[in-house]
Every structure is written in structure tokens, then in C-alpha cells.
Length: 270
Image (cartoon, rainbow, N blue to C red; front, top):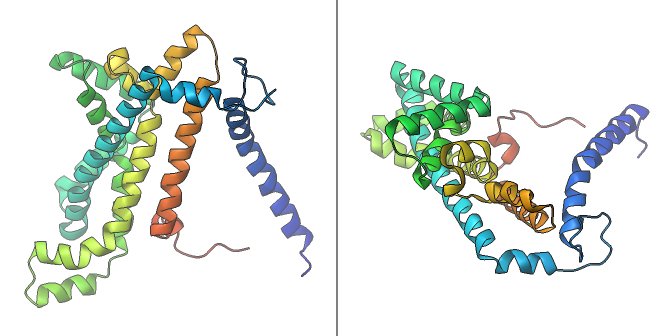
């Protein structure tokens, strides 16, 4: 099969972009296996020294556990808030739901530093500062636009005829939701959860502005550790971030059609 020059040029251009995007990942992964304290590339000697250091250090592991807890709870809260809003907007065209959806989407578009300052001021006024739940709720609020968008895409794919048929047969709202809406929406709910989880676990600015070093997440620990100098342990933390992110989206691609969940309506052309 002979490829046209246009196809070859396009594929070559895409390959260059892929290489450019992958280069930092290759460097970070390689440095994490370096035997020396210097963050040199390529590694002078292969070693698992810094992985052993990371997983045996209480501070690093506590930060990782705290980040996982915050990300999981933030994703749960964000999806739990977005689901009834999008359902009310889809089913009843409720004006209040439309307003809430607009506010949630607008918060996601606000620059991170502005959102962090707003939330820091809010928790300061309430007198509830330096708490883990502050970071959870702050992440859930700022990232609410993601599940709102994804769940609305999901609701648009539901065949209204099936819902009307369920109501015709005497189903209540809860029955129609359980029998028709929930099975169709489950992949979108999982996708929204994964997106919020991955973004929350990597978020630094809001977590630092809201709780500071009293709630030391893994990104905060990385930046705090930089004060003492660079060492490959930070690269190990970065590799863990990458593995969790790639694993989450790989799982989503197995569970459902990830491009379709993102809103693609037709197959990609060669």
C-alpha cells in the first residue's frame, strides 16, 4: 500500500509532536532510576535507590496518601453535585439548574491563582483554615465544570423515547433513572470521576493557598523539597503521578469508548 506525500507529511508532523511531548517524560523517568544524587541525563548507572527512598520515607508516603484521599473525595463530591444539576437541566430544563451549571462552568474558567485567592479568603473569613476538608471542597468546586460538561454530553446521548416509554408503563422518576438513565450514564460518571481525580491529585496552587503546609499533599511536598536541592526522589513522585494518570485513562478506555465520552460524534479520518 503506497501512502501519498500528504499522508506521510501529516504522520511525520504528528510523530514529531508526539516525540516533543514524550521527551520530558522520558527524561524524568530516566532520572528517577539514576544511582547518584545528581539529576543527570542519561543516568550514569541504573538503580532503584530513589524508589526505595521514596517508599520507605514516612513524609513522602504520608503526602501520597493525603493526595489520594483528597483527590478521591474531591472527585466524589464534584460528581455527586454535578449529577443532579445536569439531570434537572436535561429532564426539566430547570432555570435554577442552568444557573448552577453556568456558575460551575465559570469557576473552572477562572485562572487558578484567582480561584485560589478567592477560596483562601473564603476559608479565612469562615475561620475554618488549614483543614483537609477545605482542600477537598475547594478542588470539588473549581473542578465542577468537568463533570458538568461530561455528564451533559452523556445525557444528550440518551434516547428520550426510552424514557417516555418507561413513564408510559408507570415508572416514577426514580424508576426511570434506575432503569434507563443510570446504565447509559455510568461510563460518563466514571469518566468524570477519573478526570477530577487526576487533576486534583496533581493540583498545587489551590491546595497550597487554602491549607498551606498544614495539609501537605504530594505536589506541595515536591515544591517544599526543592528548597533543600534537587534530587531524583522528586522524579519518583512525578513517575507515580504519570503512572496513576495513564492507568486511570487506560482503565477508562477499557470500560468505555473514551473519545466518544469526550464528545466525538464521528470516527476520525485517516
